[in-house]
Length: 120
Image 1 (cartoon, one colour):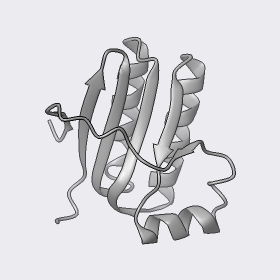
Image 2: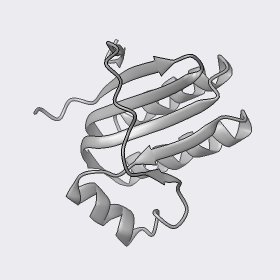
Image 3: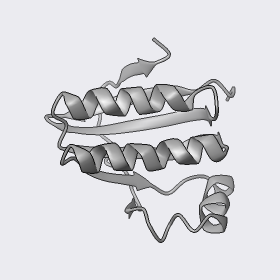
Image 4: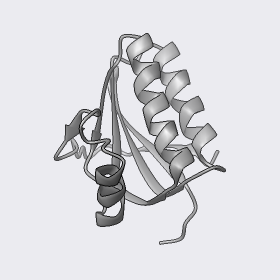
C-alpha cells in the first residue's frame, strides 16, 4: 500500500463510517477536517472513523482526529473510532488518547460500495 491518504465513506442513512488509509499528516489532515465538517453540517448523526488501515499519523494527524471529535460534539453527532494498526495503537497509548476517545473494537463492515471522498 502506498502512503497516499484516502477517505472512503460507507453511509447508512445519517450514519457514516469513514475508512482512512495511507498517511494522516500535515498535508492530509485538513482534508479530513473539511470532510468531517461538511458531513456534520449536512446532518450526520453518527461518525465512525475507521483507522484500522491507517498506515501512519503524525502529531498533526492526531490533532485532526481530536478536531473531528470536537466538530461532532458541536453538531450533536455521535463520534467514535476503531482500533488501529500496531504503530497507531502505540502512538495512541503514548499520547494517552485511548483514555479520551470513544473506541469501537470492530467497525460496521457493510457490503455497500463506498464513496471516495478523498482524493477528489
